[in-house]
Image 1 (cartoon, rainbow, N blue to C red):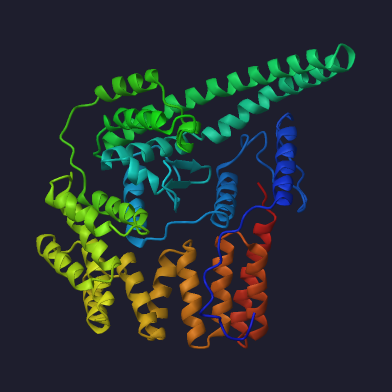
Image 2 (image 1 turned 90 degrees about the vertical axis):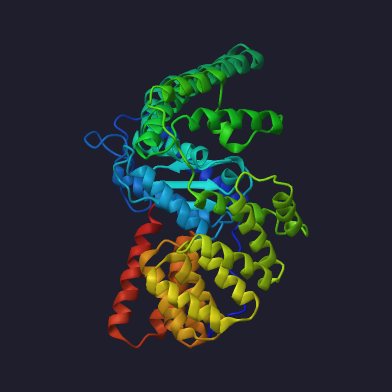
Length: 501
């Protein structure tokens, strides 16, 4: 890397897994499957082998090991897909998840969250406390209650450790499955290939049926606990069967290619009926959506229309023709469409009205500041953001917007101060570290540039690049304390390199 941070360079695009890398991962998977046939499960312990997934005293896989594997998986995922980096949407998602988690059976509530930039319906929970959604979940869930029902279901998978239990079942079944496969090979060699293939198909069918049966049990348990979580969190438990019905309609719309979520969470009439019966056991209350959900949904809708020229017409027509379930969210959408079209004055006029109706609403504050920025009223935007931060100290969306505006107005030291605060509070957010490296580069703090980029590469799964950045930082550093901190961070990353999944 050159001595000056290349500020015009775009953020690296997610990389695609090569065929060679796919083959390597498949080989690792085969090793794992082979070892699943051993009792107790114990992998080699030297630094070049796969990590131990547990022992006879700790169970098949411990919570700590789940956390390590989950974090490693998340780093790899970030390097392969496009994330949806919208602080307002991220902040809402985080608030709702932690509200649900506080009322769930999840023991470790230190969760890691990710939003994937995809209009497809999907949500997932990965061992180690990783919870993710596609932006498409906002598009498919018409209410906050339905949206929350999917998240409550995923949290239940985490709380019941279905991943570890699935491994235990596979450990028990694999010797029989391997015996069936070996027998089919013997039959094929002695009787004929057709007979061998038939035996192999029978073995595979029995295995698949067993896995499906176990999956149904997991899904039923996650439905039951998810419904309970919704009720305890003050959300509608009846939203779960309603969302299932919406998913079933989506299946018909998608035809032969259902959404990814439905391929891993199959919805059947019996499952809908069972979840409805369970939900009806809870006291019926009046449930109202938080308007924030509909504002975030509007942001996602507009984002998906960003390449269309008719976003303004879309929201204007919805308002004039009364084709909206939430007038405030549609007015907000029209304001955002004006801002997107560089008509900041029209956008700020609508947002000014909304702020009078909903004083203190952060979403309207951030968008109002962005409207001012679109009008090139930068000094007003900075004063407005700083005033709002004095009332809402360290608020993530406000502080992020302020940091970006300070970079735009070339007040790099102030931008660094704002972004540093965010990096302390959100150390797992790659975008913050990337912007921080840009700001450091503008003032010639090259060691800090390398350190910030190292964190960015670490969080996006490029550990070798992270180490290279730290090595460059170490060579350019003159402070013994800084060198010691850099060496410690390199040692941490070398440890992480030993973790494979």
